[in-house]
Image 1 (cartoon, rainbow, N blue to C red):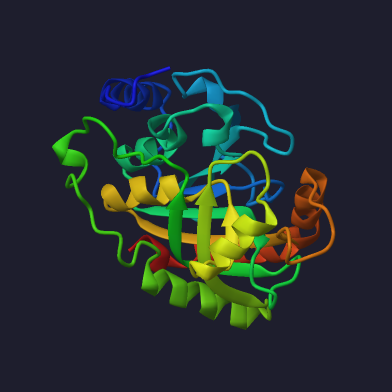
Image 2 (cartoon, rainbow, N blue to C red):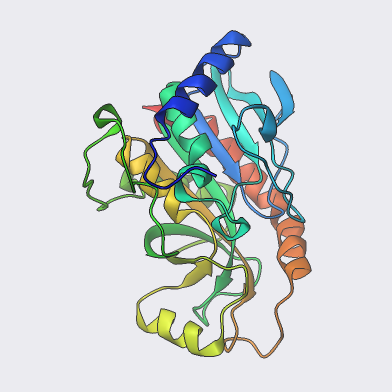
Length: 281
């Protein structure tokens, strides 16, 4: 694997060339589906293709993650990359590898990063199956995708993270949810490395820090996107209540099952959002 001090630029430049060499269209957005949350966004223009085709490092499988992508057009003439399953730090990948597809999409022209994830609920007001729009995050992964040497053209070395989750896009998502009659809450997401679930003591600490959700993804991708000037929007599915919030033990299958049950609402909300020209401006 690449040292964190090595620049990821050469491998990304090669991936951009490979993309263009295949004749694939330049995307306007990258949409990433989390654990068990992949839905049908219409017939693909390209794909589905394995992520391994475009990533310059081995892709290790996880239950519930397809690790594939396709190019779809929810809005006519506006191609997007729809990525089913993501790369996680707990698999042994470094920050540059975790965010490789985000950077590739941006270098290809994408302006928007829209993600879904499955998360544990830290707020007793949440219940399994709730959809929560992220308003902010806390990075406790122990890593950052901006480590090392990055091209200055990608962004400033010390980017600000205020409004990392674009306020205008959040207002638009709230508008779409209300029009569809979908319950959409809002909260702060704390990201940890994993893959073990959190202890009750950790959950209490996270709640004291101001988090309402906990998961093992998303934050590094948002940092990379913010650094490169992409607008970000993210929804979490509360797949379970975290340890100590609920008396029930946590299981990965519970996460996947919650995703299957919420698939209809997620698909309707994604479709309505991605068919609105305002998300690409």
